[in-house]
Length: 355
Ligand code: ACO
Image 1 (cartoon, rainbow, N blue to C red):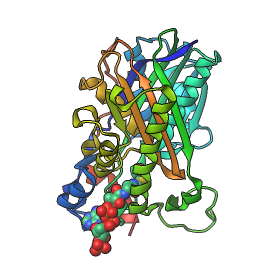
Image 2: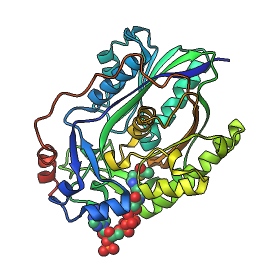
Image 3: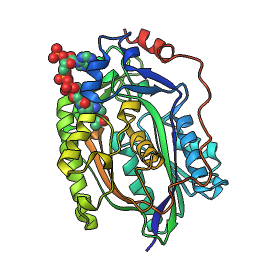
């Protein structure tokens, strides 16, 4: 039996930070409300495209795996709901940028659950013997959708990217159990308005908007992710006491804490970085995975559970067995270009046009 071992991990964090205090200058909100209701202190605003974010994360992951020539990568799978271009897909741009000549390139959209969906897909292809090496990326520019007039949603989202390299291996390692699903009955409670072929492109349309019923999603996110975690543990014949690290989707600190209480894991086993980045949708899990390795939370041979929930309403949970290596073969050096604008300058145009 072949496994899809994670041999590389990398991220791309845009350099410009938008703090809660910055937000309070453009809308009626404050650091105390945002921090206490969501756990978010700041988020990143990208001055470059989703394809650029994905490219940097992928390059860092390839270096981490020690792969200096990307031409032997078979598959580039990009989880995103903020593609730079829809046709051609954004993954093809990333494939070109990283030099994965000839590799299959495909975008996956399952919103916040996208990375775990993509990880499942690439792992299955490796296990079936169809491919040997894949780069799986989650990259988002969620702030592109934000209507800065809507304080309930504008404070929640941020931009970024994370990636992993998967390689066929005999080691029992990588994604060993997974459960994905979608509760489509309630797909309306979280959606983006004014985007897609649904709109009348010959009319002047308003700005896009992330619309959601926050409290309803909150409850469903906790229930959905907790159930998915239980299902995956059952699938792999494990118990929560066997788990070293929980990597939950980072939509709200209170959602994370509710899941943690339900599955009964101590604080030191739970990865939290929502304070720095907010909700970066499909980029959340790979960034958190990468930072969990960097901060020593993920150790050699750690058993990891990851869970996500997003628009659709999609959900996913994954059981990942980490390998022996927790240090990159080549350290991460790739980053976006420098940006000489402040966060408020970067969003100024959008803020003016939301009015
Ligand atoms: N600053 C100050 N006040 C605010 C803000 C803000 N940014 N946003 C809302 N308020 C006000 C509301 O207007 C309301 O005022 P009112 O009582 O006078 O009407 C009050 O705060 C309470 O609003 P609620 O919506 O009830 O606040 P709640 O505690 O439910 O928190 C939140 C809202 C943070 C959105 C929460 O419901 C949540 O995190 N939901 C799930 C996350 C989510 O929906 N994410 C979207 C992506 S989906 C995903 O990633 C899973």
